Image 1 (cartoon, helix red, strand yellow):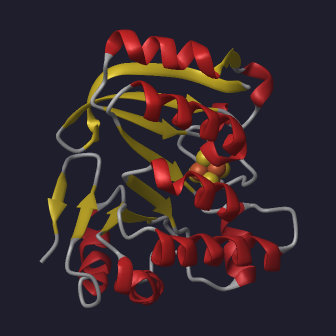
Image 2 (tube, protein in one colour):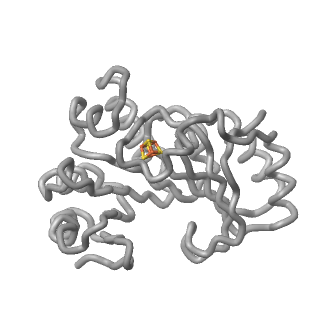
Image 3 (cartoon, protein in one colour):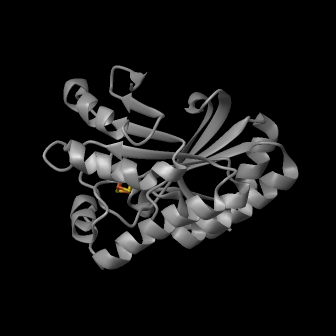
Length: 231
Ligand code: SF4
């Protein structure tokens, strides 16, 4: 099977904690977040395409300690990722991380046995209309929220072997409210290994991250200047 991808970065020191990793930026996404940091990946027509064997051969040569699937939404190509992960599992010892928006719960569940790290974006409070508006989703809001909730449930039930990170990106005027972030942190708290708040403005974001800290022990705040642990 082929994978649509925009680029591949080798020897990335920060994409996977304490491991030298290769990152594949995969194309396509079912959402249209106005704040997307990689909008060029949403349109697959401008992306390259290679068979899974191309990537497995590359990793056999470069021998990364970790492979990171980023996007776009990697699980939009869940079958091809599953095929690549099966090859990698036989071929070499490597940790695998995925960044996801949670829209494809069944693909996530299928891939979980191969994963060691899942970073799932939660965009706003877990209410269907809020979620659809925040993500520019043009389909059925009920389906969108149901998919995200099923992804969370799979992580809770089937992901005990996986490091589970939840990312909350603060967008001014949309979800920059401690009550919203706190409701998300509270929901995932029973199985959250790390809650990452991403923001442009540290002063506004710190009280929001501190509100999340009431529910999750390991909270971090990432701004353009630095990443810090929140107490
Ligand atoms: S889910 Fe991620 S990749 Fe997709 S549009 Fe939103 S921010 Fe961009």
